[in-house]
Image (cartoon, rainbow, N blue to C red; front, side, top):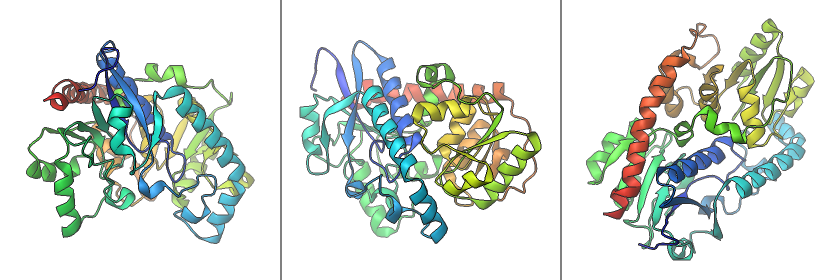
Length: 380
């Protein structure tokens, strides 16, 4: 193993800097995993965020997203064009977050150069994850995310890696079975694929919570911007437009007399009275959740940070029954917070003492697994 200043350096390989659109959750899950790794044995271990761009994102230009939008209808395209100034401001803030909050690798890496990363960055191994790095449809079984390089095989573990809602066929399952054997241990975010994985590998496998949940609201205080609006407000954070979700949120805000703050690419919603905040950076995103009266979202990490900051919230499914959202709500013990059409019964009040007790138990189990990954499994 390579050592530098008596510290073992572990490279985090995940979806963060390069995305189709800037993503608060992707940025924050890497930040949290870096902080968690650094806290395990501060004098002996440090995390390095590998500046890695997977092949499927090589040609993506975040500042020109019109061609890669999920929704290609005329109205969505218009709203995206009207949001381009906010997209530019948002990206500048994200770039600053990566520069100031990540311990970034000295060089940038692609599939052509990743095999050199271990030596060039003086790494002892890799932690792959979190986020949907194992998702077939999203990353096409990317060789980097599956540690499929000579210098990565058997020097890699995964933490809270997710398959999303992948749909494997016989051919892709056969390829997956080979790739999984590159790891010394596998921490998986959702339970759905774990039984299958355990049948096809001999290494330790465990369900581990998203790294953002390894930190507490106190841990996020140092990167949370000050409150931006004095009056009470509803926050609607939309990863994909949902008419039923918007109606639910607006009706609720109107009944309560709340200002309506919105993070979305629906720029024309300003005409409906929305304060549009797609220009918000990571620090402002945390603040907007923390100080809101309620959050309505269809974002996995929008839901997580609502829970971390103990907010009233509902989470709308993006695909009728989104695995990662429904599984996590079950873990929290508040499954009634999941909405599909907004006509569901009013959810019961959240007992956050019980929710955080559940998170605390899962946090201890996941941190213990991460410690074993770094101190035992990867060094066997």
